Structures are given as C-alpha cells and as structure tokens.
Length: 136
Ligand code: C5P
Image 1 (spheres, rainbow, N blue to C red):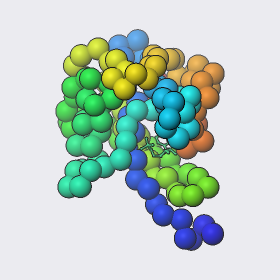
Image 2 (image 1 turned 180 degrees about the vertical axis):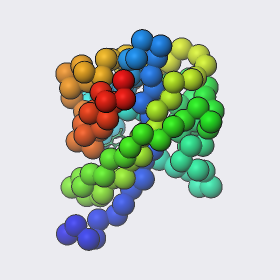
Image 3 (image 1 turned 30 degrees about the vertical axis):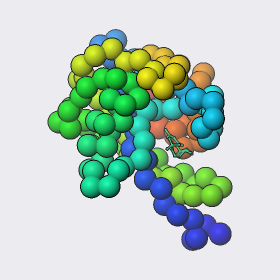
C-alpha cells in the first residue's frame, strides 16, 4: 500500500554545456531499469548533503569536477515506483571541469532539451523534461 512505501532520496543533475545541451546517461546492464537514459546522480552517503553527494557522484560516474556553489536547484521528481517512492531533487550544473565520460562503462549523450523525449527514461525522470525546456 502507498503509505507503507519507503521514501528513497536520489539526487540528480542536469549537466548543461555551452550549447545548451543536457547530458544523459544510460543505465548499464545489471542495474535496475537497464538501458533507460537518466539524469546522472545517485543516493546520499552518511553525513553528506545533497550537493556534496552530487559532486561525488559526478566525479564517480562521469569523471568531472564541480563544486557545491556550481549546483543550482531546479525542481524535483516525486514518483511512486512499485516498491518505493522516489524523491529526486534535480540540480542544474553549467560549470564543471573535465570532459564527461562513462566511467562505469555507460553510454552518455549530450541532447537538446526538446529532443530528450526521444530517449526512453525512468518514469520519474520524464516529468523533469519540461522544466529543462523552459529553462533552456
Ligand atoms: O541509481 P540507483 O539504482 O541507485 O537509483 C535507485 C533507484 O532510483 C533506481 O532503481 C531507479 O528506480 C530510481 N532512479 C530514477 N531516476 C534516476 C536515478 C534513479 O528513477 N535518474
């Protein structure tokens, strides 16, 4: 039942390049929702703030450096998955150092916001697209 679902907090980022494109990352085989394209991010570790967790995840997943001050909150997703309820704040980051690469072997892509719908995404991520279209 809905009220028994655990709330899972995952922090995500719309990384934006100088051309106004957004980076999406394909969930690798073996993970849940494999093959779907998502905004990069992940769960918090003990003692981390949302922003610290995102800076760490962007380094781990994409090998880029950024700073807490370079992350601006945009909106959030609140989605009832079958077995848990996902709460996912979405930050925007336009300032980062390094060239993103899929450290975990995942495919990545820079996509214009209006084209994001061409990429199958987890249900929680899809409602975030209009916010990016409005922003960019
Ligand atoms: O990435 P991870 O598997 O740790 O994320 C936990 C869950 O959060 C995923 O199984 C997925 O259901 C959801 N998620 C999502 N959109 C993202 C990241 C995670 O829906 N961008």
